[in-house]
Amino acid sequence: MTEFELIVEKNKELRTCLSELHKMCETLIKRIDTEGLATNHSTNSDIFEMATKIYKISALLGYLKTFDLKLDKFIKEKK
Image 1 (tube, rainbow, N blue to C red):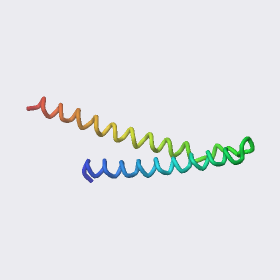
Image 2 (cartoon, rainbow, N blue to C red; image 1 turned 135 degrees about the horizontal axis):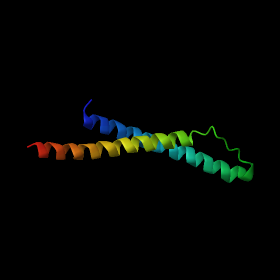
Image 3 (tube, one colour; image 1 turned 90 degrees about the vertical axis):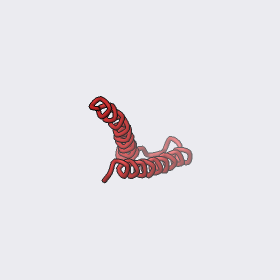
Image 4 (cartoon, helix red, strand yellow; image 1 turned 30 degrees about the horizontal axis):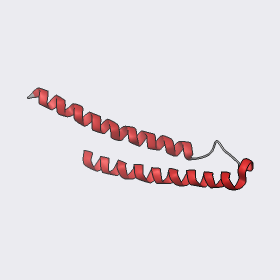
């Protein structure tokens, strides 16, 4: 797998995760709106897990971009 393919794959995964998180949040908002204070909240919610996954993918994509820039500098210094 090339770096480009990895970046494309991770961007697709990030978009999917963001869409899923959006759906989870919309569902929770609707429950709060309809049930009010009687809404059941749980620590077993997948919202935290999905948000953590989004954070990790974003961090990886940021690292890949930074790593590439540092690598370019290293190659120029060698010449």
